[in-house]
Length: 161
Image (cartoon, rainbow, N blue to C red; front, side):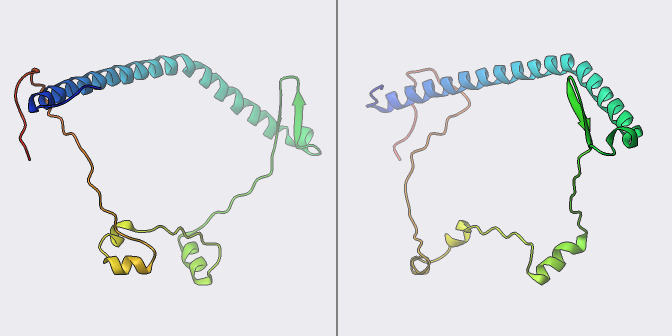
């Protein structure tokens, strides 16, 4: 770890830190560009296969629906050497705009998530917080705000606050 002893050391370190951040950002941009290019290439390559898959799926569904009585009246599926097709029973619940209100009135089938509103608690007094098993905790955290422009190392800067 670099030893920092003077304001010049602080200024030089901030300049180096800023350069490092800019390099990291540039590399991340390059990575995102490569990822985007790879996704585009993949999408272009996979697209015809997806189209063929969807067309075959649609054709199989059409055949199975048209031949449901003949092939799926007893067994709901039919096995083939490379897979199986068939019909599955499923159900889902559909609701209307009224459903939630009616369920709330009855007090059933409602999920309620409880969260602590820490923003609201921050306005409470220490005594109020103590009553509910909470407390204020204050801390001081170190921060670094880098400027967008990098000053060459050795230039004095900063102030003693």
